[in-house]
Length: 345
Image 1: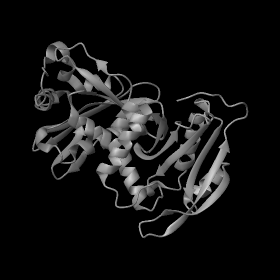
Image 2 (image 1 turned 180 degrees about the horizontal axis):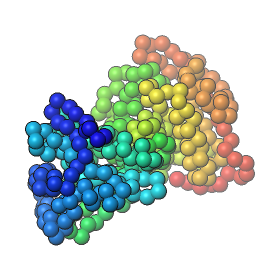
Image 3 (image 1 turned 120 degrees about the vertical axis):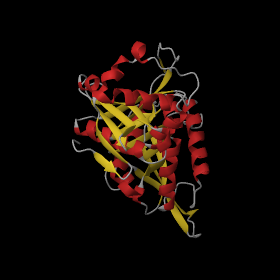
């Protein structure tokens, strides 16, 4: 925005080449908090002397956050490929960590990229920047791809992070591990809203994270498939496929923990998650899928609309927080015709 985004403590405005010395000072203030990092601007980062021009030349944009005439934050964004934009140079003065400035800067960059047509957002972060990793994970980014090795004087290794703006994607073990906090938030919100998913409210964050940590381990062992759903760049849904079926059921997979955050329900995400899980089951060579749900829940209508067949009902199968008993319905769906393959996870 030409006029900048203001806050009682700062002003976010377009970056300028003249900001170079202040930007260098800001970056070093952040880097110097970590071991083994060195800065040689002229040899390795000469673009810092004219950073606004550098990003403009790549079709991108630079912003600076100013407070009392001092540069206290920065961020840039540029197109990466036909559908993805890269978030770059995210730095906030250490004295303002926790102030919300980082979120304001990232909001600015993400809005710009999405308005320009970004379908996916990506970024890189030094493996030593553990605080930054927690920030990106809170913002629904997940680990993506292999570690990148930079041939620089700091011997830098970088994690890749990414997220779709909208859509459903499968998470590997690295992505699932990095998503534990956000997945825990979704699980806690759904349980609090009354979802019958094995837990009762109040569900402690540590217990919710421990659950997703176990799931990540099972993904690594090939026993589960986990998908996550994003809307407007925020992870708001998830679902699992259990492939660890008995040896006499190598053709079956079980769908579990289909969750959509209460704030975005009835928007079609549940259907997208189910379709993604069914596709994953077919890819794994499974021809039959099963699931269960509390009778009368929103999930029942979703599954019936997706062509699932009710196999039976067990009265009083689950209890709610107030001790009331609820019936559970069991569903099945044939995923494709043909002989089941005796494949194992």
